[in-house]
Length: 184
Picture: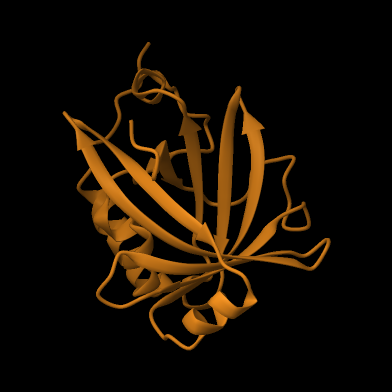
């Protein structure tokens, strides 16, 4: 049993807008990630706008393949002010986003509205407790473009991109996808 990293099973989608009942005014967190060059590490700062409370973390995320399925391992450490000050001096690729949480169809979904260079990108991540649930899940209608496993949508890769680059990638991805044939 691995006691150092939690396993995350999820599927990732690009969406057009937050689904109802969520709006940009709904409760959310502000997240600022800085990726430390030449490592799998990032420094995450999270702010709750409702309370102005900050949480600072050192995180490591990495993909693990189990047969044909991929999961993500996440290791994190909470940083106090002195520890954060050491990492705050480091520079690296960054992402900024507002994160919203909601349950749809019995599944927890995390929505990220990106800011800065990625303004215009909105993703939805559906979380699962088993690979079987992940495979069997029928996405809600608003989850129309799945990008699970697409290298462009790895967090570090996104930090090095612009929204225009993401749009161009999505255009190529959609044009190479065979059309869906509706069932009668």
